[in-house]
Length: 303
Image (cartoon, rainbow, N blue to C red):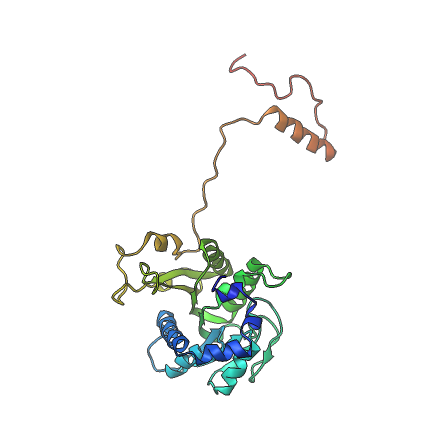
């Protein structure tokens, strides 16, 4: 049986009261969440000027990642689909404002704190200074209901996120896609929404420590939207020589990629194709010459 929770049940069912308390009370989970949140905050590259920023924590759960944002002096809004997780966050008296809702659809949110709008991510355009998400976005790649279509849910999510972010703001998602197809689907959806950026891989050669972050910037590609380098085994940024071939393949820093050249067939249009096109024209009411034994016949090079 798979140990990936998104393959076992929808998040609002998997994280029930029992699982939510088990998750929040695990010292191992608390430590991992703290380290991942610190790294995501580092990749946000917020200005070091002592001014608190308003950040969005997507898939905030019981507020473990939000505590890291609070410790760094920022204000935050948390969004999660699990009522049980948010109940524990309220019990723990986290500093952030909480929203109950599905990040993948334009649905009404039930506010647990005084934040309540009626569509998308329920936030006014351009008010968020940055967004993080720890192990949440890949849940959108699964169809938990007959009405779910992963491509459309990702489109709705990234579109509403793009609208509420300030111009030039970053969003950092720690993800663990099941395969390359999922990674490409997430990247493509983000690019279509207007984001620039790509994938940052920490410890790419380590099976255990390898972590994947999607770093996006709200706005067109520029020097400021360059994707940061991932960390190597020594904790420092990887050099170009250390970057794996896989990283180079999935990192995307420019949305305007060149189009693939179409293959030009050297075969001419055959007799069957000509008959088919003539029949289509006849159905449209056009005047078409009658078919004869000379129709589609290949001419000699010279008469």
